Figure 1 (cartoon, rainbow, N blue to C red):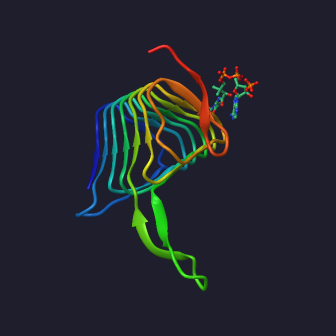
Figure 2 (figure 1 turned 180 degrees about the vertical axis):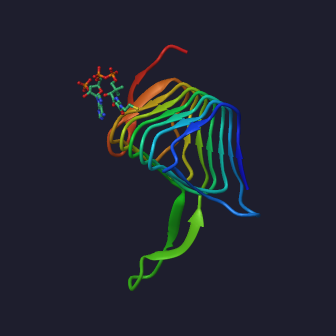
Amino acid sequence: MLEIGDDARIDKRVQFNHNDEVTIRVGDRAKFYRGTEFTGPVTVGDDVFINRDAYIRPHTTIGDRVNIGPFVRLVTDTHEIGPAERRAGAVRHDPIVIGDGSWIGASATIVGGVTIGSGSIVAAGAVVTEDVPDNVIVGGVPAKTLRTLPA
Ligand SMILES: CC(C)(COP(=O)(O)OP(=O)(O)OC[C@H]1O[C@@H](n2cnc3c(N)ncnc32)[C@H](O)[C@@H]1OP(=O)(O)O)[C@@H](O)C(=O)NCCC(=O)NCCS
């Protein structure tokens, strides 16, 4: 199922992959530019802006008043580490949570199992492999705290 709130401005080139068992829920006043692909289940809060070509995978939750830059990847997919002949073993999806009011910079990658705190910024190009607290800027590969922001 696809549930979109009121006053959405969603480019027709945004793709929502859902079915009767898998729901994508988007809050009010969504503004999504072209090219993003959502694969459910995904929940998006109110007043969320998504620039072009984000890749948003199953079991992602995005809070209210979040901005997501172009080419961001929220990659919940991962594999068990398999034997040498194929290291990418069994697939699973570890949930990602993006806290209220946060800003995810261009081309950032967030891997499965990570929670981004409320009011935080992920710098452009970061690869986030660990939880991020509230009200900080993180950046780099792997992402580290660059500085703390006022609450
Ligand atoms: C993080 C950001 C917001 C700048 O924050 P800031 O605190 O003003 O950063 P500054 O420019 O003062 O730099 C502070 C430190 O962070 C580092 N830094 C800044 N951006 C960084 C990045 N993307 N990756 C890694 N380190 C970064 C700087 O090199 C500097 O390090 P130093 O103290 O060792 O010199 C900005 O660099 C950024 O990534 N913006 C995202 C832009 C974007 O995605 N736009 C899309 C709009 S939807």
